[in-house]
Image (cartoon, rainbow, N blue to C red):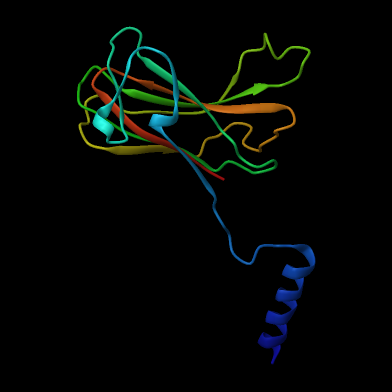
Length: 163
């Protein structure tokens, strides 16, 4: 009987305080085709949903907006890709930039998280980090974006943010 009453009490607390009964993870996945490539020459790999770096200098560099709800806490930043050469790699960076009108145009963005593939792996890999600086989303004061740097003969498929 005590266990039954305890279960009811827990259920009432969940309802009263809006506490989640189980942990839930949300994901934002941005496919590599959706990035705006601002440097280098991207190669949209034969309609396969991959983007390959097609220039050696500068490396292919793309950015994409991150739209995550106000107050969400970022837990994991992950980028999936493949590199086939020993001297090339891919890098994923998660950034935030202030929207304060006093200094937003001149203040540099702040790096929140980064992942980098080791050179010459040859297989598809998803690199992730949970080391995220200032991971609580504040859409009133900041804007968020992901940057992909894709080396020559390197393919990237997506960036994912878990919150």
